Every structure is written in structure tokens, then in C-alpha cells.
Image 1 (tube, rainbow, N blue to C red):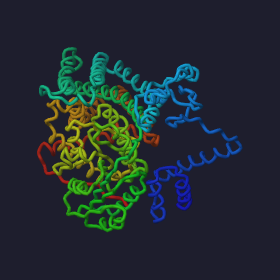
Image 2: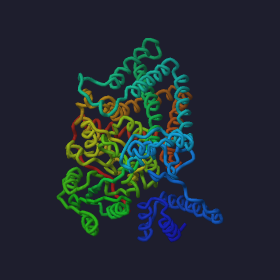
Image 3: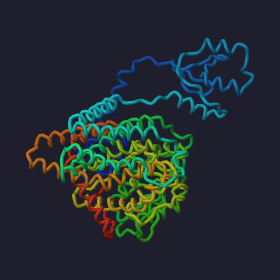
Image 4: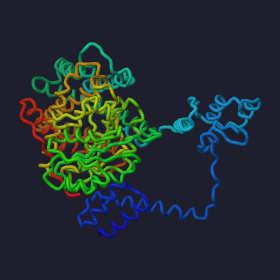
Amino acid sequence: MDAENILKIVERLQKARIGDVGRLSYIEKTIKSGKNLYNSDIRYVLAKSEQLKTQLSVPKILTNAPKQAPPHRCYVCNDELHLQDRVVRHQNEWIHLTCFDRKLKTTPELQDGNTAPERQAQEKSTLIPEQSQSSKLPIARQQHKRSKEKAKTDPVLILLAIVIFSLLIFTAYSMFSTLSIIAISLAAILVFFQIVSKTSPQVQYKYGRKGASLFSISVMIMPFGLGTIIAYDGYSSGAMSIIQTVFIWGLTLSFWQTMLFVPLAIRSIARESLLQAPTEYPRMSVLIPAYNEEKVIRTTIESLLATDYPDKEIIAIDDGSKDQTFSIMSEYKDKIKVIHKENGGKASALNAGMLYATGSIIVILDADTIIGHSSLKQLAKSFSNENVAAVAGNIKIRNRVNILTWCQALEYLSGIQIMRRGLDYFGAITIVPGALGAFKKDKLEEAGAYHKETLVEDFDATMKVLRSGMIVNGSNMATAYTQGPNTLIDFYKQRKRWYRGNLQVLRRHSDILLNPRFGYLQKFAYPLMAIHMLLIPSASLLVLGFAVYQIILGNYLYIAYTLGLYIILQHLLSAMAVRMDKDDKRLILYSTLMVIGYKQLTDILQLKAVIEEVFKLKAKWTSAKRVQQ
């Protein structure tokens, strides 16, 4: 399809208000400027076009339908009345039972002898619980809406979860018999303990005797226990017993992670669906730090201007750019605040922007990111809980142009939809991404704002907020589209900074590991990060070496069988993540590379960062090249 036809479809979608406004605006400008579109953008437009056709076909069928009478509404809260609601008829008006009870207690003149019989005669059957008393009508109305809503669970997700757990049990019984059964049993015990022992945010942070958490201790002593069993039962000897111990230890962690995060991820979807829009949206200050971003900054600003939010201010900070970044920002100075400063790094740019921010919520947006049309409103929903200090957005790779970018897209998706949703249960999401994240301004300032000592200022800031005793949640409806490196060189530059910066943050906050006053950050989140950044990469490569050795010995079937089970499990997890986020189903096809291929590439880069950190080699800021938007 040529660009002219795509442009016509985009204009029709914009007129019908179908699709993401920011992304459609970007596609429109790209076509008008004569640039080539990504295939993913073309597919997005065609998919939304089919959705438009479906919607347009509905009115034609209903044009001759008789007009329906207006719905009955509650006289007190003005909400629509449904057949399943319990209502009363009073003075020729229909009223929700809960609304009537509230009015009955606050208005004595309504109490008459006929009230009770009349109420019994007019009640409709329902399961709506009694509402809390309130004299303010908007609050009562909001509570009534919340009481009627029920969490909906996707049956496909339940089916996928059952298949995943069945595969885990089958794997345990078929691989090493006694050892694998021990592995899955240990994993089940850990999962049960972590879910049952969860406490409320108000009491999780408390002082106590210093020491490692039960989870940390279990992970540390597990290899020794498994090694003892292997040596005693004579499964193998010498170096092979060590490798086999590592393999069973890794298998146990895989069982544990899957058994814990899969059900918690499904629960997170139900919880997020019940979040209510605030009665009054807080003022948001959106900070866009930029250094030499002339290729992308215009699109980022325009997508943000088009975002639907009633009270926002946009602050663009030029961190001493040497190109036309500041000039492009200045074109919008009648609509946004533009700040120019000497080059000092992203952390200093964000701190400078906070000095000019007037909103109670600080939103961070990378200069190469296109924000979703309703993302700011979705972020605001999560701040309805007063204990929530920060909210992480849902980052998506937009330029899916080759195998590398597709793998990154699947990596982002799996990490956000499975692992991060599990951390959301504990209120301990460890990274509020710089691509899209939000903080309560006062909480971020109390924690110390952004610091220049690490290469990943977003990770460091999130850790400081968690240390203060506050909750960090995620919003998967608050989407943002970013560019992923599309060459190995750019990918290496990006991950070199990320992985080295992550280790800097771990070292900077290492006191968390032995201090129970940090709640779930000490009990669960910090040890989990340390395992993934330090232990898993080396263990993964060691197991790969074990597999190669077994192939040399001729044990092809055993390796193929084991590898096949892991690949099937990864496909199932990818399918679940795609279903949760309603993303492109073709992402599932790249699941094999998450087990062998892309996985080893990231492991090697992670180990390289560990070696550099151990020998304290100088860390430099490296980033991928931008592509014109």
C-alpha cells in the first residue's frame, strides 16, 4: 500500500478517534515529510483500519431499530439503575438501597411508618454490599460504582497458567526424578511462604535484628544442600557434580520464579482493572531531558502536547546540546517551558527541571519516546493510594525492523507483563524507567532526587524512594513507544551503560541486603536483582558449557529433550505476556532466542560488566545512535 492511501486511512482514524493519537500523529508527519515508515507502523494503521470498518458497519444494522427509552436513574446519585440492583421506590422516585439507607440516616424526615414495607416490596435481588456512610454525594456515588465492579479474569490466561504449571510438574518428574522433585518442592515452599507472609505497606517497614532475609539465605545455602544430595546418592562426581548442582539450583529458581510470578501477574491485571479515575486530576510536570536529540525531540514534544490530560506542564531541558536540540525546543516556548544549561548529565538535567516544576507529580519522559494519548491519566489512577510514591510506565519497542529489535520487544514485554507485575504485588518495583515514569514530587525530593554517581539515574532514584518506606507500582495502561538499538554495536553501547550502571546501584545500596527495616526491598526485591545480575548469567553460561560437553559425549537426546522443555515453557510465558498486553502475536515466534541466542548475548554483556565493576574500570556514558523520527 502506498503512502498516500496510508495517509488517508490515518486521517480517517484521527477523525473517528480510533488508535493512539500520538502514534498516528507521528505516522502522519512521517508520511508528509516523505520519509519511510516502519513496517510495524504500517501494520498498526491497517489493524486500526479494520477496527474502524467494524465500527462503521454497526450503525447500518441499527438504523431502523426503535429508539429505546432513557434508562432509569437513581434519584440520589444519578447512576443508571440495572435489573440486578437493589432499589426502593420512595415518593415516586427510584433510589439505590445503599443511597436510601444513607439518606435515611442523614434525613430524619424520611423515616415514616411505610418505609420498611415499601422498601421490602420494591427491592430487586443483587449482591451489592452496604456502602460506607458519607454526606458528600460525589464520594458516595464513586463508592457505589466501585462496589458494582468486579475483577474480570481472562479465561485464556487461566488456561495458559494451568498448562504452564502442568509443564513444570511434568518436567520435575521426567528430568532427574528425586532431584527435580526436590527442586520443585523447594520452589513451592518458597512461593507459599512469600505469598502467605505478605504484610500491608504500613507494617512492612520496621526495625529488627540485622541479617539476610529468608529468601536470600535459601538461595545461598541451596547449592550446598543439592550438592550434598548429589554426592551422597552418587549421581555424578568431580566437576560434573558441581555443574549438575548448578543446573538443579537454576532449575529450582526457574520453578520458583514461574510459580510465583505467573499467578501474581494474573492478579495484577484484575487489580489494575478496578483502579478508579481520581475525582480531581493532580497537576503533572513532565520533564524531557535532552542532549543532542535533534532527530527525535520534535516528535516527542508534539506527542506530549497531544496527550489527553487536563492539568499538565511540559518542561524541556537542553543539557548543553551541540546540535539544534535547543532551537527546536524553542519553537514551542509559547506552549512549554524550555531550559538551557551547561552539559552535566541526565541526572543534573532532571534536577534542574524539578526546580521549575509546579506539579505535585513529576513525570519523566525520554527525548526519543512517543507517549500514549491517555498515559498521563493512567499514571494518575495509580496515585490514588496515598502510600504510592512512584509509578512505572509500560515501555514498548516501536522500531521492530530486524531480529534484534524483535527480541528486545519480547524482552521488554516479558519483563513488564510477567516479572514486573509480580513485583507489583509487593509494591516493590525496582526500576521506574526514564522512558516513562512518575514520582510524587515531595517524596522524590525527600529521597534525594537524582544523583550523578551512577549511569542509571532512574534505577538509583527508585531504590531511594523504596528505601524511604513508600510503594512503587506499575501502570501497564500507561504506554510509551521508544526506539531500540537496531545494530549490535548500538545494542552493545546501550547495554554496557545499563548493566554497569545497575551494578553501581547494587553496590551503592548494598546495605539493604542485611537491614530488615527496608521491608520487601530487603526481603525480596534486592536479592532478586542481585541473583539476576550476578548469579544467573554465570550459571546460564556454565549450564551451556555442560550441554556442549554432553553433546560431545553423544547425549543428544537428553540435551534436545531438556532444551525443548525450556523452549516450550518460554513460548507459553511469551504467549501469556502477549495476551496480557494485547501485543503482536508474532513476538511469540522469537521465544526460542530467549533461551538460546539472545539470552547468551545478554549474559556475556552482563558478565563483562561484572568484571569491569570488580576491577573498578572507569565507567563511561554510552548510548545508541538515534534514528530520525
